[in-house]
Amino acid sequence: MYSFKAIKKDSLSQRIEKDIKNAIASRIYKPLEKLPSERDLMGQFNVSRTTIREALMSLQSSGLIFVKRGMNAGAYVAEINPDPITENFQNLIKFGKINFVHLTEARLYIEPEAARIAAICRSEKDLATLNELLAKAEASNQTSVKEARLINVRFHVEVAKVTQNPIIIFISESVTQVFSAGLIERTKLSKADVLKNIDAHRYILDSIIRKDEKEAYERAKSHILGVYHTYRRIIPNVPRSDIRGLENRLGDFKKDGKGKSRVTFRG
Image (cartoon, rainbow, N blue to C red; front, top):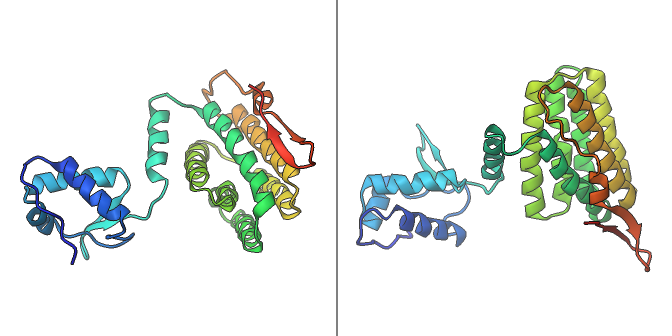
């Protein structure tokens, strides 16, 4: 069994945190694997229980471990996920640092390009996943509009996954979660409205299926702008600033001299 080296100084929770973090990064402890008990860690590091708990609490806040209570209690290595990023976004919203307009702009920078890349490199498995998700949203819309909305917003995250870029995936998932969580809790849509949003996603998916990267980009951008203007009318206290001119800042989709598609940006 792997043992951490004892350290001589007290109050070294940051050092302990770093050592455990390195053990996780080195895959000495793998995702969902249980770490040694607090008592074992106290003996290995030669420190107090308080110091161990400080280190574990910091690791938990970072999203690297999670703690189980009751049966099989203890600290476990977490699957890497965007939850810490999402939590930071949520805190920024609570303290008024970002708002609905900022989130929309972020989506416009990320999601149309993700749709474009998806149109280039999607697999049949990717298409099946996207189709199944939209079909599930349509079915749920018959019994629970809220559930249908929660499923439907996952479309953008699944498109981001096609890029196979973990940074794009994590950011997309965090922004989408924060954006959709607030909207779904604060607003109500009819079944017809939800179906309209699902159809908009099918419109984007159609471009991805046909590998039309330009169309996928433009349809994704148009959809996000449409969602923005829809919710702008029904959400109270939305900042008066808007996103006019953002399309110019995003740039136009053009062809280069070799006939290849590219996005050009204007500063």
